[in-house]
Length: 268
Image 1 (cartoon, one colour):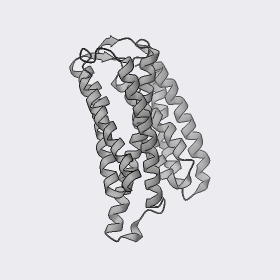
Image 2: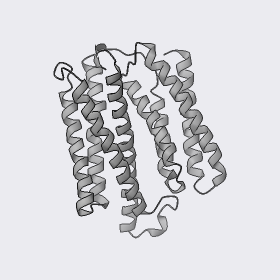
Image 3: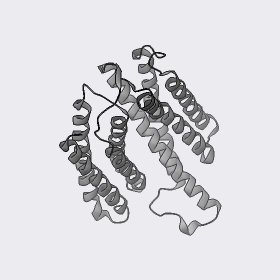
Image 4: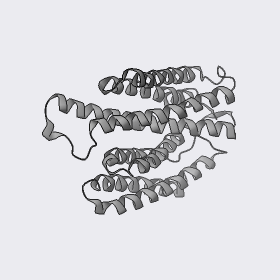
């Protein structure tokens, strides 16, 4: 990893942590808002520059497991800024920004694999759609966990311990299904582009990735249909969301780990 990439990676991690902290503080103390937005913008800029240098350092858009994690982190940072525009959603925004910092820590590193299929604009579009879907559904999973925490405190009647910085449960559920709906739309496009542009699935060892992704798509489709038809909410929505996201993690990052670390190969 070149020294410039290291510097940008370290700077973005520090700035993301600062942005997450100040974003959280700004819920009750608005004077921290300016610090939150400035540090978030600088973090995204530093992360973007480091990631671009990293992607191009070893060939055209070499998106290995580390780079994919970093790209997901940058997408989470962008999403955190969008979510943070609503003050009552800034707890979720701070978690997303902190997660972006974790992703930024993976920026750079030399790939150790043989390239199966060279990069192309079609594969780039497929990867970007996949990262967008993953970021939105990651945010949905975080929202589901927050819902679970609030639900448990309500069931135990510890109303005084409910975090005042969190939105009401009804509003959190609305945010959850908006994130799932947007993530489902991008996941649908990602799967369609994958079926169209990815060739030789068996030769590239991508069958299990495709199968897991399709199962996750079906789970989210059923969840959205259940919400619209039967008003599914609460723990039912939480369980389906977390299970669907876990399948996506296995499908993409699990597949890349096995393909690159065990088989020493890489696609796209």
